[in-house]
Figure 1: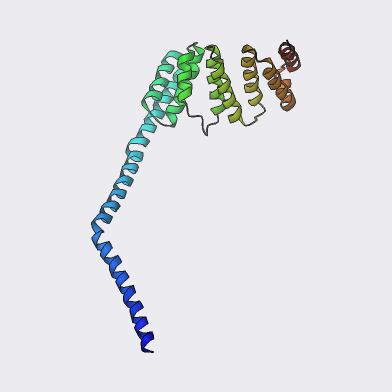
Figure 2 (figure 1 turned 45 degrees about the vertical axis):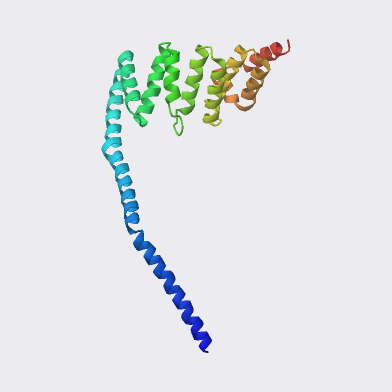
Length: 225
């Protein structure tokens, strides 16, 4: 029995020693723990401060400025609106600036300034936006006018992917890509894309009165030469 008591006491003593060791480590590291906690609090304060004191006021100011640009654009004052959109896009970094950049790109494209338009479209964050596919298509149009056909194909591929087989938009982007492939004399690939439009998007063909059969026949004929 004595042996069991000794074993029990030894186990308790070991447990006490372990607890004492932990307490000592906590005591020794108390200043470090305090500093770590203080650092976490400070970082949280900085983040919250940025959101409420800088980000939110900047977002509101950007929204006010882009609203003014929208009015000027609606009134046909394109040059004034363009400068206002560009100012918002260049001076802010938020959702309003994202839209302002795309609006600036649209006006620049209409003015035939394709290089500048492409710059703003490239800076546009298309993720999670309804106009993302259209933005990529606009980028492709810019590259077509700049005769940068490889870049145009890439942009139209992104537009096709983002449009997620939408019956109105996807076949239009495919048709644009096919047109670029024709310019590159890749007639077999052009014919394949046109056939996919015919097979998957009959409503598009009827709605836009696209003579896809004639286009396919022409592409196949040139591919066979």
